[in-house]
Image 1 (cartoon, rainbow, N blue to C red):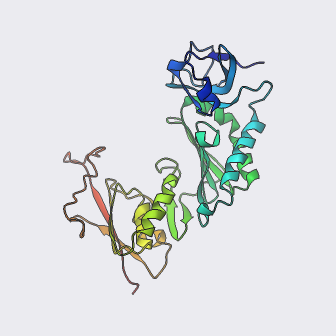
Image 2 (cartoon, rainbow, N blue to C red):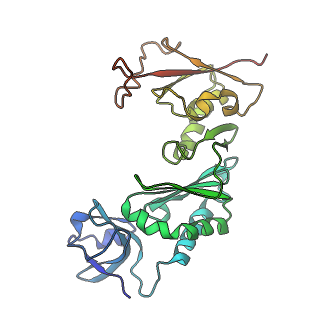
Image 3 (cartoon, one colour):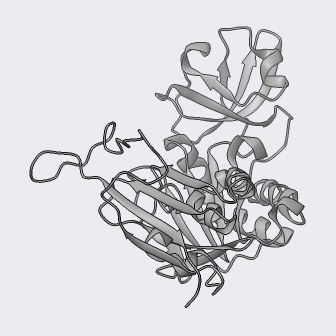
Amino acid sequence: MPAPRWRLTKPLRASIERGHPWIYDRALGKPPAIAPGAVVTIVDDAGPIATAFADPGAPIAARAIDAAIPDVAIDDAWAEHRAALAAGRRIGDPLLAGCDGIRWIHGENDRCPGLVVDGYAGTAVIAFDGAGAAAFWSPRVAAVLAGLRRAGAPIDAAWVKGDRGSEPYAIGTIPDEIVIRERDARFGVDVRRGQKTGFFLDQRLNRFLIGAHAAGATVLNLFAYTGGFSVHAGLGGARRVTSVDIAARVPGPGRRGRPALGGRDRRPAELRPERARPPGCPGVVPQAGARWPRRGRAGRPVRVRVVLEPRRAQ
């Protein structure tokens, strides 16, 4: 059965054919009788333009997934092939050498709109962006994992976070904490309760950059979360690193200095609460709770500072 047609009302053919995947609701006519995740053909007066999945009612009402090629099935084989192509772009990438926390599928960048798959030392975390993406990709999760494995991604289990508000579920056994490598750094990742998929993998190169410039420096890391930038600054030879976050319980490696630094005796870390102004940072008064405050009993934002201070092994 041919896919329902959804007509453009704006001249976007050239943009879509160049690869832009998003089609906003204001650029489309009245939707056909379709549910979120349904496969549709985007058309204009000149004919078919692209195959997309629909998300009627959302601002991004359709996401292009392929050219409008007749008789091309958007099935499990299609999803497996797309996933294998995505993983193949990361296998052997020299920038990922020594790392086992890897974004295997990066949504629209890998022509898999609305789908993110992060890998943490053998555990995949799958997230969908919106109801349409959730409805489209959920039935194809097994095919996606098969494609990643076929390309060489080491995946033993998966945590499917799904879309916001959906009930996550496990495929296989999910460890309470997963320790990943990022060159010399080690990070503990909680894929069930952590932000995003558990860690900010997209900041890897920025963390490397901080480490490359940190020797001898005094570093102040605001909104530190797991302390990834702090750890790399310490590994890069920073004299002192102060990490600031509003969370009363510092997540991940922020509470475990030695493992976060790779457990290496030549640079163990001391972690302790820090209430005074960080030394070497005159005039800096972090307002970590200013935008998203978590209120304490006294009605004031809760601020927590953690110091990572390299020192010589005893």
